[in-house]
Length: 80
Image (cartoon, rainbow, N blue to C red):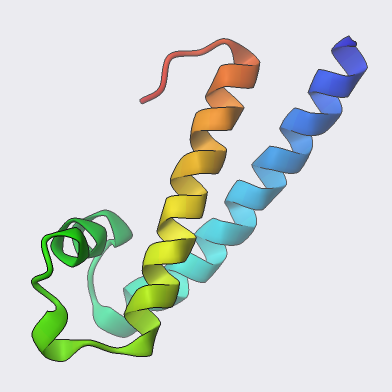
């Protein structure tokens, strides 16, 4: 069972790293951190400047948050 958790945690960590890479592309393009963008997106403040990128960016950010939560659960650590 321990090996299974180790393998799964490595896969989740790889997912997080891949998501971070994709998120960094949006962050450079739009000049803001994903956390800042997402908070604004959730409040609807980007509606005036809507872009298809915003939907993709928010989806990637939520996926990253979910993977991070799962990773911490698997390791038995509190989330940051």
